[in-house]
Image 1 (cartoon, protein in one colour):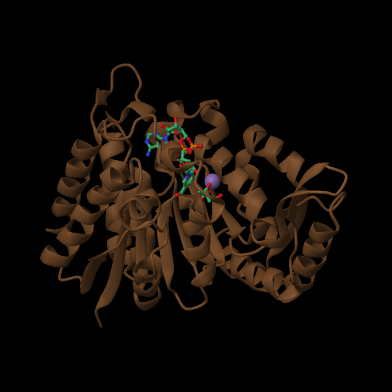
Image 2 (cartoon, rainbow, N blue to C red):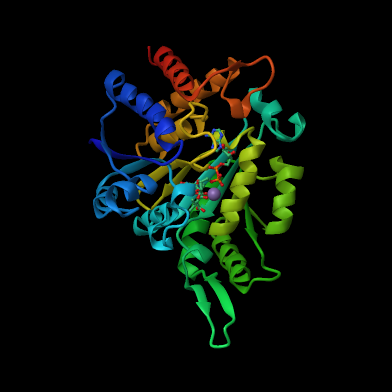
Length: 362
Ligand code: NAD
Ligand code: IPM
Ligand code: MN
């Protein structure tokens, strides 16, 4: 059966990196008979500039109809002053929510040859392989009431609400325990149970779900300590499961453990293998349009698409091996450059991944 993939380049470096991933998937289609059909749509600033809406109805309906979405990133200074409802970031959040993509997997795996690109000492990160599972459609990102208001007294206030329902915690906990069974059998749930009732409740519900997985070790950690432990000794973790906002923050930290945020992919999944695949990083406006962006996070997100939506584990492995091999050969975009390496741009990095892939497919 054909897998329909909706490609959404987005803003900033989005189009540059997405086109490298598209080269890879098109090659798999043409040379390895992968049964995929690619369609394109706009979202974010690019969509706003064309249509006046950051999430056009046509994009939303195509996103609902497809099997998987390959997405670059959205946002940038040009659109920062739009009303919040039209901001690029709001479009992305709506998309995640409308498609019920509640399970955001953010694996932080260190390729051995990138150990010295990490801001931590080699021995702290060597062999790192952790998975952050971030709840993506609830929590403070979506809680009501929200907004900024002026009281009768003239005092102004901003409000966001941290709210989790038991079913939201239960389903993300199941995802974490099930994935842990395929890895190191350990889950660390991260919260702020000492201060926030909502996350004390989160801890209680995760613990209840954990009783169904006696073979998986469950621990809990407060988020401030977790941030510290991630840079002190990240290898103590296997699977981390946490709330929407804590997961957002901790995954950027773990990106740096792997050498660069330009290396970290993600998958946002619903309960039926549908997924939105995007790098953890944003639109990098500071380097957009200069052929400097690292496309590896994007290409590795495509590998996650192959693995999770298409169940093409072998092809996913080949793409990941191709990326690793290019890195091992010493080719580097500026974000992971070190003296003596060969500095290359986005396009060239894509070309090299493709040629590694071609060799592996033969
Ligand atoms: P960012 O991740 O875009 O950039 C942070 C730093 O990392 C920058 O110095 C950038 O150059 C660098 N960087 C990021 N990706 C890189 C890559 N692939 N290769 C090399 N260097 C890379 O974060 P930011 O600057 O805080 O946000 C910029 C914009 O992106 C904002 O509008 C933000 O809302 C948006 N954003 C979007 C997403 C998304 O669409 N999923 C995620 C995060 C941020
Ligand atoms: C991410 C981003 C988004 C988030 C923004 C752009 C809405 O930072 O995917 O990590 O906060 O979820
Ligand atoms: Mn983020």
